[in-house]
Length: 464
Ligand code: P70
Image 1 (tube, rainbow, N blue to C red):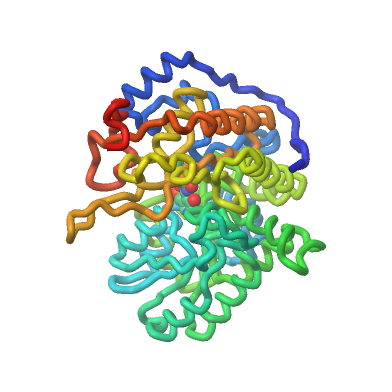
Image 2 (cartoon, protein in one colour; image 1 turned 90 degrees about the vertical axis):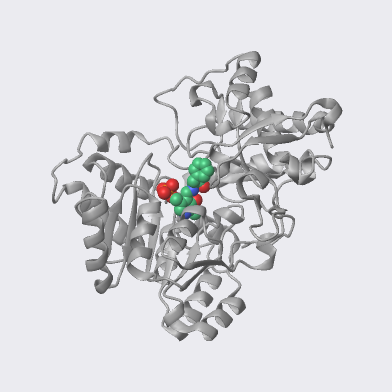
């Protein structure tokens, strides 16, 4: 259960506040028990997301001072372009302000009404951008990827048999591109093997369908390939990344994850014909192609971050820190998705709180408790986020799993912070039977988890 110590030391500190329990309880009440509505400076350890929350290095901060804010032809763009070309091998590099804009540009250019885009699992914004074109976003992850306790080294893999059947039944006219998300965030941050990406490439190749990677967490995925896939232990993560990107025709990237920056992203690909369409759209909605909605200094931070994320001492520490949290919880009997993914530990709230039915949001119960008692912010990925009424029958529909994600920001928290998180979750688990379900008081028609308001059941009414 050991992992490498931090391969960095701390030069700048940012104080975090541990507000009193009564204050936390008051803020929660005011927020309608919705953690998205609690001000961040009243949170002690914030595990809401690993996106845009990384600590930049001294080299990245120094890079901000050499930002060239010219409207066109900024030197930082050329550095970013070279960095992305070196890592991916793709010819065209289009910066964007974050990942979802890269998705928007790609799907606007390539996807039409009535078409189907397969993926292992679409992330929410990817799905929304596919659906905005009037197309279907289809998830084809392997069976094991949907089972929280199945032990498989690459639970993010695509079911190639299903993909092949989809492609042979529909062909390129109906499937304009295929995607693979590395690592598979919606499936628990699980990696995809090189062999699987190669098999997907071959299936797509047979039907002339281009393949794109949703590459937000590509470095973490490559680290898992090095650790787990036969034949890769002696290869550098940089070599593995080059091979991985080489199997696809392009990628979308939210650099807020493995770009180690607080804002930024890009779309990269080989096809010359795609460039013209994408640039024309970019000019209308995002900016000139040498800045793509970002300042020159942001481009420099991204170029430097993309280099740093491939450092193997960093990756060993990073993936080790997340795994250690997962294994500590596991050893204490806290149920979670296994094996631990690259960026987060997902606690299984249905098994944690078997006495709280899905209609009473077990995941959110745990989220509320972790903040009220310990000042920790996690995020519910379950009945509150995905539950809805069936438009035909009017019945409530719940997702298979109610998970609580503890996403670990990169280079931000120390091992002592992680020990505090583990002890808090374990203490909550020990008194789990005293936790009560929640009731929705307000829900918006779409993406209700962001604005929902909830209330606790009175003790006498619990379970009814
Ligand atoms: C997360 C964030 C973003 C993301 C992703 C994949 C695989 C694209 C994007 C979009 C979003 C989030 C969720 C809950 C709370 C806060 C933030 N994922 N593809 O934490 O990228 O945000 O840059 O447009 O995971 O998982 P972008």
